[in-house]
Image (cartoon, rainbow, N blue to C red; front, side, top):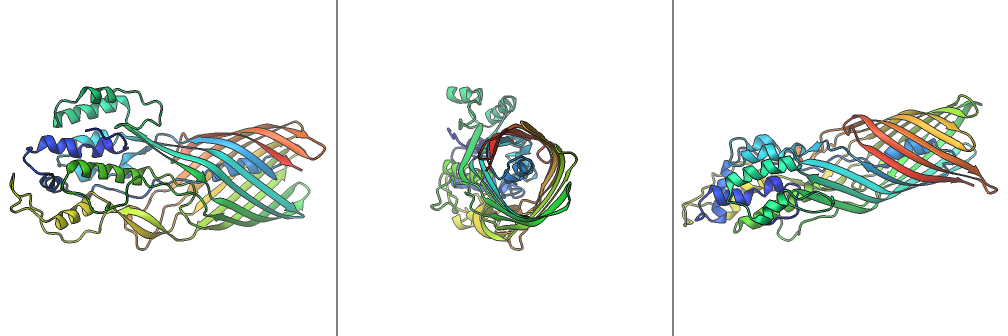
Length: 449
């Protein structure tokens, strides 16, 4: 079988070869589906919610606010998350215990997930007396990658070999094929990329000077949801009715469903309006050195989202597999589909979701002179778990993002007849937290007329 695009192919591709070898060839695809369902002790999906993602602006904003000439800035940035996310966030391994699929679970849990974000950041800040109004947005691409390392691929291949007939020569070559470039879609690797516009961030604050060396500002913060949502990968025609006549088609449907759920790459907040507050304080130690502290809290309004979910558990009749070569005593298609949707095949639902609040706070030491400037800061960025009164728990991201980051920026300033301009390099590293090891780099410029 040649299934060439799936992060979960390592786990779900087994449905076809495993069943073909485990059960006699005289069993029909429908009978093999029944035997598979009878071997599952619990629902397979642990969570059908997209993996929790943050807006890159919350990582960029603290550093950029400290730049000289911030009133107009443009930055090209690239960020990369660590390989910390695992398949267990989506699939419950205990569901496979003592089933025909158990040998594949140890290999499947070693699948790694990584995300890259790259694009252009734009921002502008207007000042009139003590009032400051600004906007920020970014445009670019968000990419998610799933793969299995070569040693783990070999282990999975051995398990697959014990279940099925000898592999073909092309399959053996694919097992040991290099993983570069990362956009290559194989049985062992999958990529999803979404290109578009991120959400627009607006802020308005009033600055109160308390001393010639100290001031603070307080104001409102708003996120307008114009970010592009992830593109669907599956064909919507009859997708919520799993096929029973061909196990190959069912395997393809399962793999495509896994891509929809696990390779979700929204560029914004999935259509949620954000409202919050912003506080900033600055102390000038000397004419060149200053300390700046910031705090931003954003609350998101409830909004409808499309999520995948297994049907709520109800009392179902026992499904019967019948006898080889006969349909006598076999359960109806309707009953089998009900069992599939309760244990194996999530269907798409529209449900009201309340995202977790986002909080960004920290402090930085800044140096600004002609021609050199730099900034070094510590920032704590946190996003809470989702909440819904109607959505099944399996559709909600119940974990939080809690990152402790170090930010650094350095650049050159130049004064012109028309104003001031600076160019700079910036970078961040997550030293502790949910995404420990994540990093980002950027190069940009500011202009102040």
